[in-house]
Image 1 (cartoon, rainbow, N blue to C red):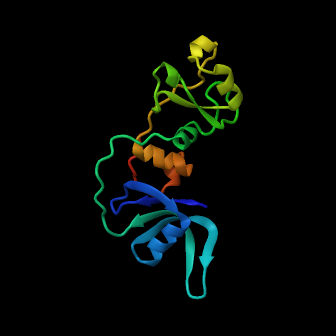
Image 2 (image 1 turned 90 degrees about the horizontal axis):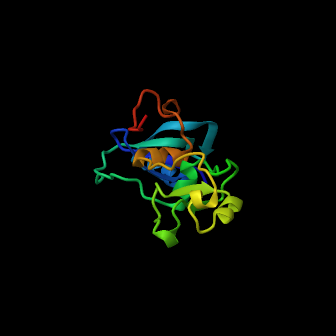
Image 3 (image 1 turned 90 degrees about the vertical axis):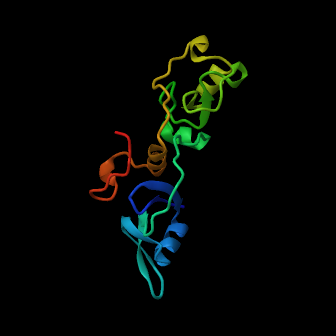
Length: 169
């Protein structure tokens, strides 16, 4: 199912929702479609609607300030674009740079996407101990960056025309 980016009334990214939820928000006049998938429309007996890619809420929703994006395995894979940090092939697992058994935790800076072969080869060691080199250093995305990466948006130009949504450059 397609994911839709939800913007606050002030054009700040809030979250992603399913296509079904996005359509419900638009039909209830709680949101407007800011950007739609080109050439694709939803039709019923009485309504025709573009398939929303980005919607904006009609009323401002106050959200507590989120300083950090929540860590998740899916988030690490998306951040690293499903590419292994050791060899560059397709990644299917998450590897801890400093293994959990050595005190490493589930954090953005300690986890990287990895293919199963390299994850198994590295095992319960640091990359240096295993003789492996990281192609890219892990980084912590901002909450806005995490949302946009999850949607596959890489450039600001892919967002609604003329709107800044708080993505760190």
